[in-house]
Amino acid sequence: MWRWIILLIVLSVAMGCQQQECKKPATGKPINPNGDSELALLMRDMFLESDSLKRLVEEGKQLSGLRKYQEIHSAIPTDSTVRGPVFDAFAQNYIASIKALEASDSASIFNFNHMVDQCMNCHTEFCPGPKKRIKKLYIR
Image (cartoon, rainbow, N blue to C red; front, side, top):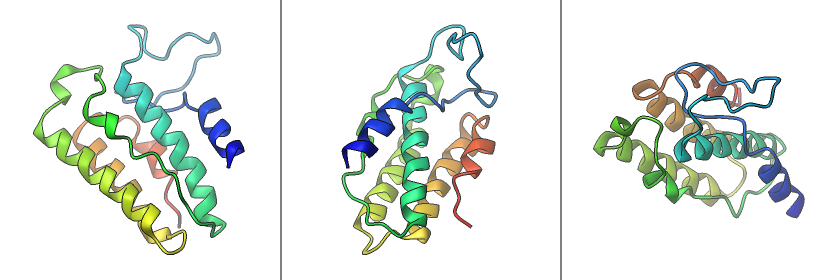
């Protein structure tokens, strides 16, 4: 269990809410020249955890101790106009999908893909850049 936690912490810098798909430059500079917002960093962490969960679901392993990402409601976005009732509804749906995934009797491909759907739904409305990367999370 600890190795997964360590892996998630180490890998927690891969995805953010940018207008273009994010790629870490070879120079090690931040992806956003104006700095990364709390929400962008949180979303990168969410992507990394989801990528790790995908492997566990594919292996049929039981999931527990998932982060619920309640801070999605308070993390400061890059663009302050993002915050509002529509964003909050998408965030709540995402959190509910995480809870459903964890409550599954077994590692449910359906519930995992439903969680990814919640990411795609929000990124269709806000910040579409990461959608190409998020699509890679789906389990076929």
